[in-house]
Image (tube, rainbow over all chains, first blue to last red):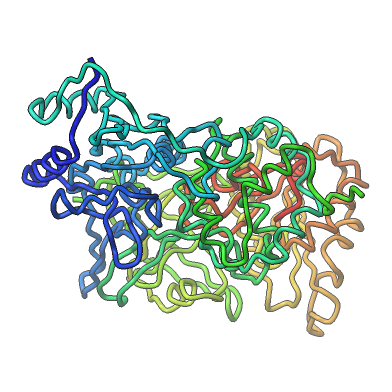
Length: 343
Length: 281
């Protein structure tokens, strides 16, 4: 029989987890928007709509210390950050586009060198995903192989029910463990009626075809055309659940400070700028090309995965209206527009 | 307290044992690891790079410029042009820097054994080849002829001036040094001309020879056709790409040329490999 949980019990679950010392992150109202943020109590959970920023900072903070240092007459002392100090975390109410992203990012943070700042947080996290019943014009998860009801990446997956509450699907062992610890909060219901799933825009993209076009079109007028209006603001990368580029900087003085890892964006001109002044990606179209190539070709070449979950945040936020879904559709259908030299 | 196996961003601490000013703005540091175990166990191969930090300013990427045959220390060489390199230049003998590495691939020196070697370098790009030069000179009998063609804009821009002299005086190395037209003083005893031209005139034989080239993009661009004309194939020419890097570990996403990560797949590539990459470096 399907397990179900009421919204009220979901709040109780959050309160219980917090009381046990866990960090619970979920969609929370923050002035004019909803953001994934640590919850102080269950009824802060704000499940309507898609949070403005992705949930990736649960595992990969916008900015984090990777060491601290202090210098005196004796020399420099470096202090480590212990990943064991990261709190057990439950990410609750993650939409399928956000729940699927960490599973994609695991590859880059664990090949060869293991980035424990990311991986330890991943190991210590449980993700409770939530199906979408609404989508806006920018949502395109269906186009990149996900769906509003896709439990991929979630440990437990909630589907809103017609009469209120949620059906609760166990996806992984982690999810099973969580469910088994709080049996009193879940009910077994003979028949459930789910709310209809959202319908994101567009059809399914042919990612293989897109990749094969990218394989052969590093040089193509399309890049200049798209990037002619790109302001290089980096909003797309900062909001993206799958963008993982970062910078490493020291903050403090030469006698005391911290070294920090913080998000960066390939759309920024300084990103690849050499000390000599030479810059391999010296103009915006090369930077935008890298963004598309990285997501739909390079990451696939290296790790067999697409670095995009179709959340649409880059489309919503782009100040000049660049629509990645439309670009991909054009590439995928062989209609790259006037930029390809076609009449 | 510091667990390098868990925190991949944690540097080893090293003491500046020696400072040498190569040119008015290029400096070499000789570094000795402070931890005895690291000092004994740190190994690397010629061509690998490291992230060097001036605490409080940040990290910067340079090759390891000393030879793996010289144990107990490493050397780096850099131009003071940014926040980190200026901070590194501000440090004195006895002070501490951070070193993360070694990272990346290396020159396949074992494959060069039994062959002649031609080194072609320009300006501040000698350090990545100097590690190979000393590595091979320290194992001199394993290689045939060794030719070094090295040039800079002016005499004062030449790095490792004492070593150039040493190589010049050795009977088992041919050193051809040059400066760009106008870059020489009246007492200059080397050649005058751009590196590709001088290389063409020196005309090393391509038979059973490997060429190692490092220099600014413009020098590499004009050197490769000269080597090809001399009969070097793309597989017999090696170079190192020096892209901007932060992590050095294949994660931060900025050093890629197409799907090639310079920090992981490089920095050493053959000319044939470079030719196959998207031209974005």
